[in-house]
Length: 161
Image 1 (cartoon, rainbow, N blue to C red):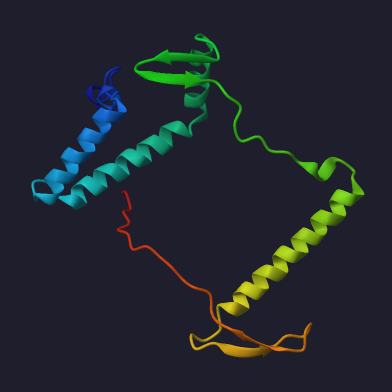
Image 2: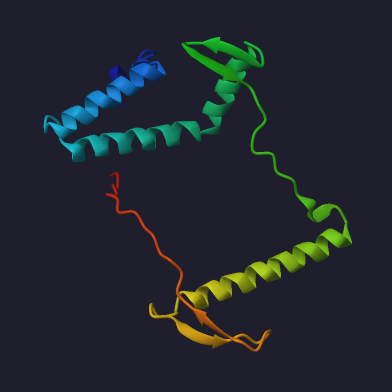
């Protein structure tokens, strides 16, 4: 890899304030609207940045280095126009080893209910748009059912090579 691509200041372009980032965004949008820059090219560049960010921030070596360096400054500190804090996040509990039969029973009921709910949702997706009548076995009444409302967003996907 070409070493001139990686130097200690190569990411300094990202050291901006909230106001500066907003201004840069407005400039880019303006240039896009004016046809000065190609939106597909900008989208590709952004996808490359996202891939780089994900690649580096998920690397355990990187995480360890950042934590080690942050430890030198204490639990909370300001540096490079930003506030930093060392915190515990993503706390999870595993109750399966507690030996609590009440928890195990409730969890079993929950899992069974989740499975029944998935099956019911699968059925509801098959209902025609005009709806259909179904006998409610619990009440003996006829329910008029309709398919779930479906929403989506159209995007342009990019496959980096």
